[in-house]
Image (cartoon, rainbow, N blue to C red; front, side, top):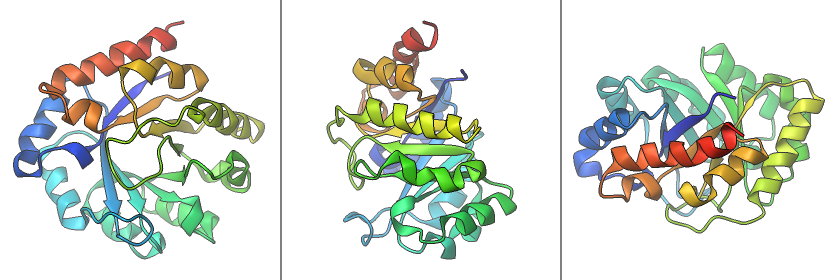
Amino acid sequence: MTLRIAPSILSADFACLRDAVAAVEAGGADLLHVDVMDGRFVPNLTIGVPVVEALARVTRLPLDVHLMIVEPERHIEAFARAGASLISVHVEVSPHLDRTLTAIRELGVQAGAVLNPSTPAETLAPVAELLDFVLVMSVNPGFSGQRFIPRSPAKVQAVRAVLERAGSRASIAVDGGIQPANAAQVVRAGADILVAASAIFGADDPAAATRRLRAAARVAASA
């Protein structure tokens, strides 16, 4: 298993975003997670294409763009052009999910599907062969700092089972309330990408927080 840490800028200080990104780079982050919210699919409103373009200019980290928006298929090309290396869309807002995932991959970007806490893992079965990764939400999306939903590791296990039955080697990311105290638990369940916002950017030293999260996750990865 290749374990990856993806700090989410949702909890970063946007007035000092370049410095925040540099800090997690120094801490050994593997990806930079970018939450795009439209105020419709989720109640919050966050960043868009211009911020992704700006991030692409100041970081060497692959940009993992999570589209929490309705009609994501209308915007994937713009985010790909802006510098996204990974783009994920929610199953709940994608009636033609196979078409959307195919379009993402045709842009040369890794394609992911996102599952809200109440969305069954089995919804991935028809598109498993199109997935580069799955993002399992361990909180209800929209805001950082929420409490980790305890049943989330079981959801990760269910997703891993669906992927294995389909012969898919897609990665599994987990996002929401991730911190050193539960990192090993979700890795043991089958996750190999940990997305963390407040646990990293809410710390006094984001670089050290990034390293702590990786160290905690490695307890399970090396078991």
